[in-house]
Amino acid sequence: MAKRSVDIVVLSDIHLGTYGCHATELLRYLKSVKPKAVVLNGDIIDIWQFSKRYWPNTHMMVIKHLIGLIAKDVPVYYIPGNHDEMLRRFKGFQLGSLKITNKLSLKIDNSRVWLFHGDVFDVVMQNSKWLARLGAIGYDALIIINSMVNYVSQKMGRGKISFSKKVKNSVKSAVKFINSFEDTVCEIAAENKYDYVVCGHIHHPDIKKVETKHGSVVYMNSGDWIENLTGLEYNDGQWSIYSYAEDLVAQAIDIGKKKHEKDSAKAMMASLMLELNMKPERTAKPGALADDINEAA
Image (cartoon, rainbow, N blue to C red; front, top):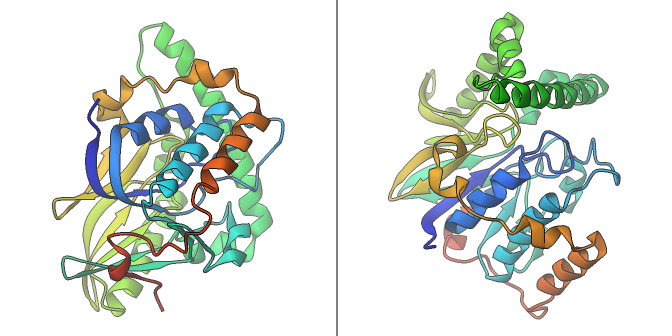
């Protein structure tokens, strides 16, 4: 199958290591595209809720696929979020075409694009981290219950429903938080003369133009791979929201899950390490976009 070429893929809030993560669907998407660069915009591995008891092969296969891109010299930029904030201490680390950074500033077609996860603007995260962690556990539990309800609902010939979306849409404070988050992000981006600002964190995919007192800015959010199964793509001079639910090509891809089910976690890890060491002498400067990507001040 011919893969679809994409200039830039932005993914966030995958939450590998949790029950709610749709790793199989993400793998199908990743196998359907040929990106020139990938930005992992936070909460990729959920270190907050990581458990050795729950790490399916499909989750390891996602990591393996991403490392495979690095082995092929595809630039991969990892911007840690709050759930994988432990990686922020490795800011500036570079291995081949992989680079860990807290934020990115890109210049694309004469437009300035600012990318960061967004948890820095979350008041709960900054002042009550324990409450945020508790909320994450509750959210994951809600997703598990939701999955069971949807399984029964589909067997009965009914469509899927999203408990968390219903909760967020019905609770005024949640709607107010999202609006406040977006307004704050856009104000700061416009003040710093950015044309686009890209975030994750709130699991709410969106692209919209926002007017601020400092001028207009295009706000973009990549969504998540828990509920929405979305990302952002830049291709042919345009940004767009990718939705797995609308991608019949990706949905039909066989990820070879049965073959990998026979592999032990130790064997898969050995395979990962082998790929990482394919070209140990490299001091790679990430590919075609490297000259346009600099860490934001």
